[in-house]
Image (cartoon, rainbow, N blue to C red; front, side, top):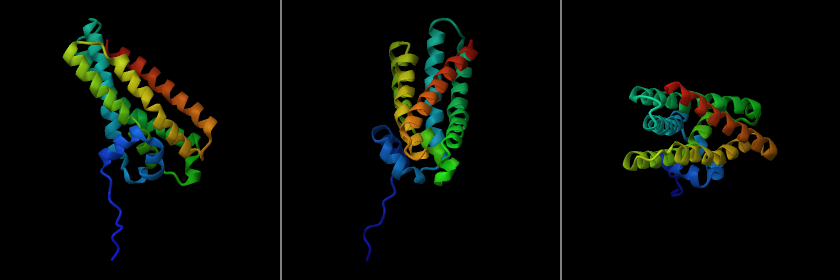
Length: 189
């Protein structure tokens, strides 16, 4: 009798492991995480991040409550469609298809990398609501920057362990996301 059955790791544990040990998750567990689940994580992460931005702008008197809602919805769109498009772009640039890495895997790995962003954004929202602090930069941007580590491991895996290429592309991805956040944050006003 075989008692060495593989135990299925819950998706939420994989998301938390992506914060602690992204290299291991990317190499061994990403194939079991469906891309819609991962996009849910990144969508919620960016929604909360953009909500913090909207609340900061509301406190400054730069926008009204309707602007906060608009910015939050833009965050949801950015965290789902934007992250998926960025993942597909990197998949193509890294020639990941030649390594039998699917677009679905790429989207899932990229999106789940924003697990830390979710934790930071949720914590920032708590501080924003409880203390009235402006938290978008302190918590939101920090969360996005923290997600660059899983992004680096994902790109490294997709590119066949090309380190310099992975660092350059990770830097570009981070810049694209932060510039996009800055530009989209202006639509609420």
